[in-house]
Length: 68
Image (cartoon, rainbow, N blue to C red; front, side):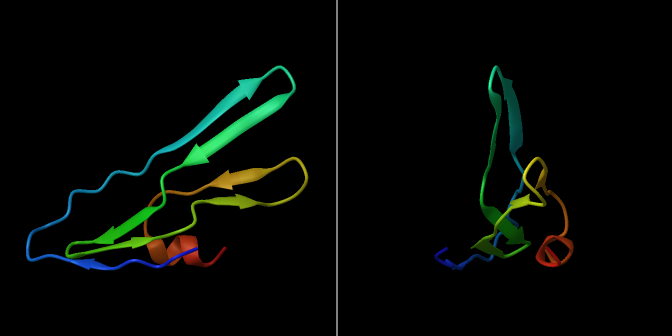
């Protein structure tokens, strides 16, 4: 995954999107990939496979997400 940093003097508004849609044959999961601090934007992984039938979607503090 490509790491992109964008610096700004203005506060960055942030919102995480993680969606799961149940289908006839399983499920579709998707998320955005933007992490941010008050002055920095970067790419972050937010979906993690925890087994053959379990996927975790994360939102919140990037330090917590990095533990996966």
